[in-house]
Length: 399
Image (cartoon, rainbow, N blue to C red; front, side, top):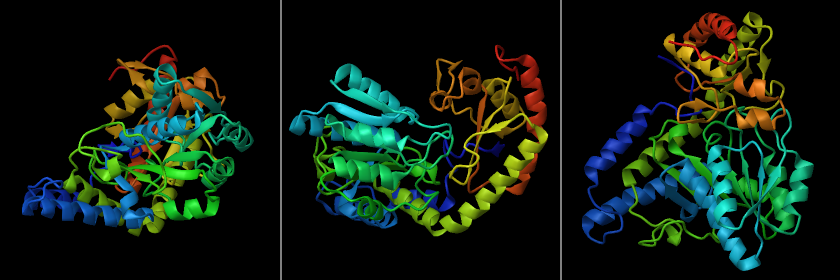
């Protein structure tokens, strides 16, 4: 299998696997127990917290471990919103229109069940937030909290985080950043972002990350929560992790996450350059083989491994299946419910239309991607496109 879906999950690093196994075998106790076995588990857990905090450039006490990126996003947005609503009476949440479904669906739930009014901010044709509209929304007077992706999960576009956080700081609005797809792939410092954008009663106070996007295990994530931030917990129980996220903690998962994060940080500059070169070669090859292709955000600053294509007249779902049958794993970047493909809400938000939203294909490269993988995709994609184009927009390819 040629795997070009690293934005969904990057393969587990051997070192992270070994760290998980070592911690699992050596530490049988519950980190909340006061006996020796429990305290041994606590030491593994807190060591992992300190190591991850060093990579994120925050204080260890600010790292709240979760079950993954989705929980971190839910906790960051909902926890901040409910705390702010209680203290200020404000009920608006500011968000760009092209966010991950972890955000979009959380906001939809809060709107339907928890009073929240959503202030949607448009994005441009590169999926970059409209900063003038963002500034207007966060300074409207009813904004309780704001949230934004560090990098768009479908297109790979990097957002102007410092400017977005500074606007929130000026307005006294707490900001949550979904950095799940960006962490480990571009430089990211919680402390530096806060310093560069300022706080002034608002600005960046919470940031979501996940282990499986950089070679750690699935089911492990973290929410960085500034010391002064007020969040309402989503779960209640033992009061672990500052009372923000109760529940028995996972020392082995935390240890594996810390190892994966350290390795990703250590190789970031070299690996970003290597992967970007592979991505650029793949992009050039696709342009040459399929002249009608549209490369999304081609001139924008993107994550190094993201290549998002719009292939006119071909259903993205058909292309995915045809490439899968050739042993190449890619994504459409669209949400599927009950097996029914839906057009990409991100592409729609970019103003490219329904046909483009149904013709999207996301290829994401990573640590395991090789030159041979790029060659194989360039050999298979033109034929897959020709077959999918013949099938048209109303049909799905058959394996």
